[in-house]
Length: 234
Image (cartoon, rainbow, N blue to C red; front, side, top):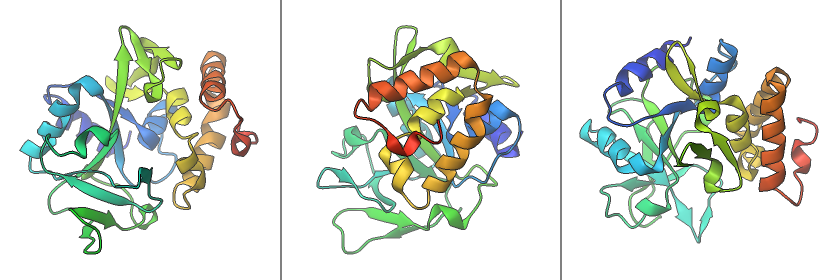
C-alpha cells in the first residue's frame, strides 16, 4: 500500500477517536494498488468526535479550514474559512474540514477582497500527495450499529460493512465512497469530474453484487428525480 496510508495509520493510532480512510485512498485500499494520483488525504470521523479531531490537529499546530460559504452556497472554486476556535460561527456549518501540516504544501493564499480569514489554494491537479500533509476531515453520523450516509436516515449501512480493514487499517467501503462521489460537485467541477468518472469506471465492475445493489438503491434514494450524468457509469 501507499506509504502515506501507513504514515496516517501511525499518526492517528493514539488520536483518541475512531477514523476510517475515505476518498480515493480508500478505493486504492479496496483494490490493493494505487489507481491514480490524489490531491489530498481523506479520513472519515464520526460527528460525535468532531471536537476531538479538530483539537487533535490544532494541538499539533495544524491550521484547520472549513469550506467557504457565500450566500448559502458552496462556491465552485476552492475557498476556505480558517477555523480559530469551536465558538467560530462557521464551525457548525462545516461537514468537511481541511487541515495542513505547518510548512508543507499546498500553500494557502489569503483573499483580501473577502471578509474574515478566507483562503484558497492551487488547483488539485498541480500536485500529488506523497506525504501526510494535507488532510480532509469528513464528519459522518452513526445510529446504533449503522453508518448514516450524508446524514440521510434513509441511507444506512451496517458499520461492519461500512468500514472495512486492510492490514488492520480502517477504510470506508468502496460503495459508500462512490455514493459520495455521485453528488453534483463531483460531477461538475472541472478538476474533480475526471477523477470521479475514473473512479466509477474502475470500481463499479469490481464491486460485489450486494455492494453494487446498495449503491444503486442509495443513489435512487438520494436523487429521486434522476441522475442522468451517472447512467453511463453505472
